Image: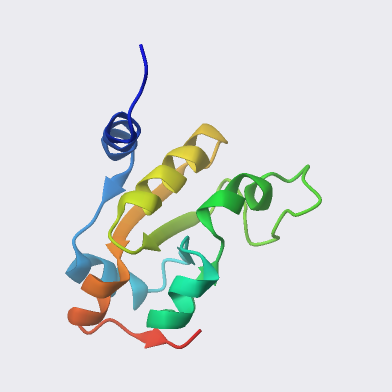
Length: 127
C-alpha cells in the first residue's frame, strides 16, 4: 500500500505530543532545561524570525545532526535531553519529532508554528 503525506503526518501526530502555544510560552520561560529547535529552512526563518534562543536544524538535516556517529552531529543533540520543536504550522515539527523518537530521543514536544507563537506574544529573535 502506498503511503500519502497525510499518512506520515497522522502517524507523527499520534506519537509526538503537541502542546498549546500558551503552555509552550510558559515552558520557554521555565528552568526545565529544554532545548528549542526551529526545523524550518533558513529562508523561512529569515523571513519571520524564530523563537528566542532556538537552535536551527532544518528537518532535512535532523538525522545527521541527531546521530552521534555522523560527522555533522550537533553537540546539543543528546537523546536524554528535553526538546521543543517548532516550524511553520506544526507538521514539520511533528515529522522531525517522530524521527527523533525513532532515533532514541525520549522527550520531544511539538510546539506548532512560529506564527501562533508570535501572535500569542512569545519571545522571538531575528534570524
